[in-house]
Image (tube, rainbow, N blue to C red; front, side, top):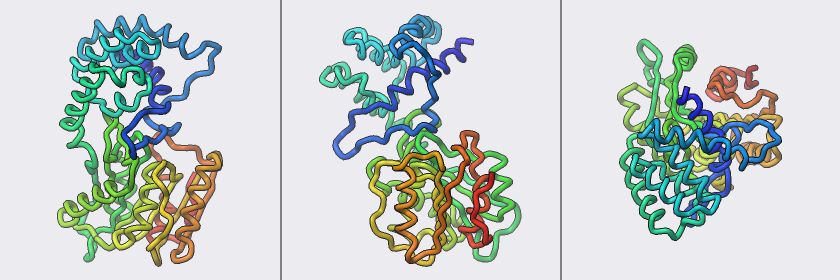
Length: 350
């Protein structure tokens, strides 16, 4: 029961902190967490203020901090709440406790504006350095890590056509049995990559500075898996959503020699979209949701205009809501088949 309560409290309290404006080293301004991020959760409508809600949860946190003596997040959140209230000594006390328990969530500590008042504190700086060291040791094996699936049987003479998926902000590579069956039936190898920056367990993002580290992660993966899985290096297709789609669009524009086509679903993010394209004779599909705001739609249409002159490009606006259940491959099976030249219909499914 306490685990359930803690999970709910974690999503409830951390969401506004993670979504707010953060501090970050020059040139590394972070993205705002999109509403569909796995680190976010819609807040219920209430007449109570956020401060009232925090006050109500404090006794539960204080109880949990003693019941689970290995938990890192509870003292971290108590530290953030205390810092926001100007209780500097108490905030440092809870940060020290979180660090003692193994705090490694470097980006969450660095980018959380609740700790703005502690920026010059020796205690904060010391804990931040500790968290960075732990982060580098813990996160490096998972950043850019691939999951993959190939059909049964012998590959074509030229190797398996390959679909690479770049996830939205805050997600992780996760190939379900349904995905394996779907892509096996399509006769393609399927690869998902974790993002190149780790935020928390099973939560990653792509670089917020440029798409270069994303390209490097993809090429390292292909170099390793192409001979192992008998992949066709001339038939590598990018599929991507959200932040991943912005990176994929830039990669298609800058490095078209590596990618045969692309399916870009709701591109968004803060790295600059490519202003020129080297891509020619590629099939590129750009999809966005009808309920998206102007900026989201404008970014999708930017890529449409960018690729339309030299490539076969299609754009679709549709009413399907953002899928939080991982069913995107089923919804976009037809557009992906079009990108691969296997279908004349590029309409997203219901």
